[in-house]
Image (tube, rainbow, N blue to C red):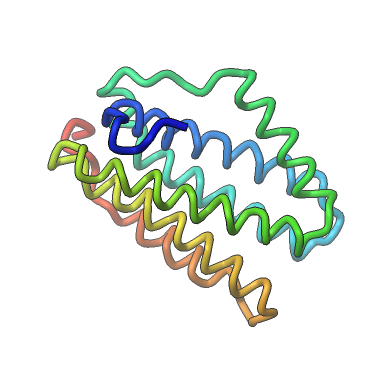
Length: 167
């Protein structure tokens, strides 16, 4: 991976957008593969979160000419989703926690590079990774309603005003 200080905003936005597309496919595939209904519900809510972030970022991706993720990239998401849905849940969550921390750092590097009118949406993309981290921590600790931060965040995302070019 390129040092974040050397990446352009366009490259960051592309990576973020494609990462969200990866997440949708990964969580959907995992939900299809998992046998435990409670975990399936969690995975479907996480997929919904990724879809909400994609909706938030799509106007920016379109504005900057960012195409959809490649089929080969999304094929990796299917493979990752199969592992997430069939392997030991606790081990997979611990692996995901490391990935989330890396995503937070990568996504945050895009904020100061973004045009001012796009920074809020990029901040939400950063924050949603933190929300996934909260879910993981609560789930690993066996706390009640580990999805609460996720569902609250989805509600907040749904209340964001349309991007100025959307109107």
